Image 1 (tube, rainbow, N blue to C red):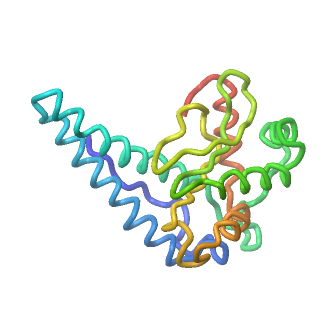
Image 2: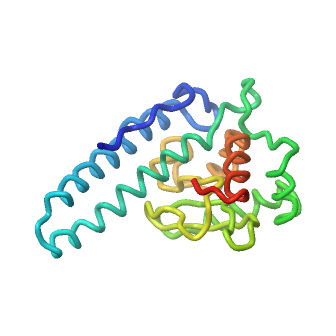
Length: 203
């Protein structure tokens, strides 16, 4: 079955002023759609490949575009309209996720600082992650290059640090984008992922 572009659970302008309507429209309808199209093409070519060499040659395309599709599908769910506009974005309510954040980082503010510092340090393009260590069940910060999906941890929050995610609004100032995105992080979705991860199910 072909992969498809998932619809956004909010309007393209819902995350303003922190992420502009123009960025969201281009990011979703152009960039993510491109990954979906290329992944479908690579999967079709793989299914028709008749030699091991042909299948090996397709691995990079499958990894890059498959990762792009997986990561972006999670990313859209990770976002919500900001509380300033009546949404739930940026609000970490009392519950198991907040308790885990305090246990691992001391406070939400400390998590944000450490996450932003680590993610801003990515050379080139990639993703910043807050994930559950499957061995310890504790929250940890991780990064992946390019469109590599997070495989070492179970993802709870993922932030796209490719320039297409912020350049039209924040130019080359990654730190401003990272500071802003916390206003639209969907902590309700993050908590669901955290609970699923720590209860033994995988996402």
